[in-house]
Image 1 (cartoon, helix red, strand yellow):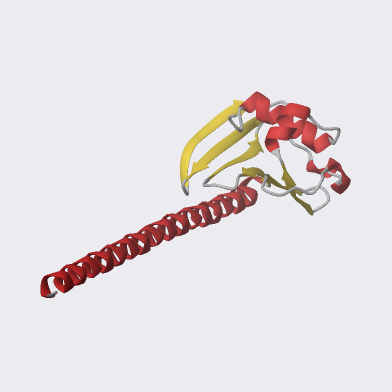
Image 2: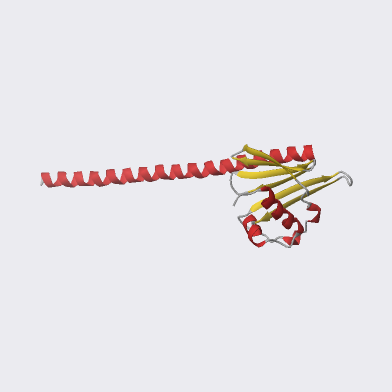
Amino acid sequence: MDLFSNFNVMNNLNKISRLVISRCVFIIFLCLCSGCHTSFYSQVKKNQKFSTRIYKKYLNEYDNVSMLSSIGNSSVIWYYSNGKINITDIKKAKIFSVREFSCDSILNIKDYKQECFNECLDAEGFESSFYDKKTDSLYHVYICLDIRNLMINGSDCPVAKELREHIIKYKLREF
């Protein structure tokens, strides 16, 4: 009987140790998952903050600026100056590249009409600001839109048409 009871105790200890080990592994797994999740959102927030700082800087220097910002850690900011479009690609809160092209037209946000766009979820944002020195007015627009859908289907809205043309012509967004 003594031998049999020792066997049961050993068997119970094995079960308990497996249970403890599996719970520890599960807890470690949860900690790692939450760390990755938090890290991604931290990068997104850091990129948004950096992009906003560059956006404001360009608006102050050039009186116009536009930005495509995605739900992620990249954005594209551009401004028009002296017949050129200057494009800054931002990735992971750093300037990834700066490009410049001759440009014959600027994006005119004065033609923006709110009813041109439907509300959307999980989409990119288009933000544009323009300071009109003649009228001493600041025009600012933020549009939530699905860039992929715009690229495929187009739009009747003048600002969206111009935005689509600029995305294609100057490769503002790669698909």
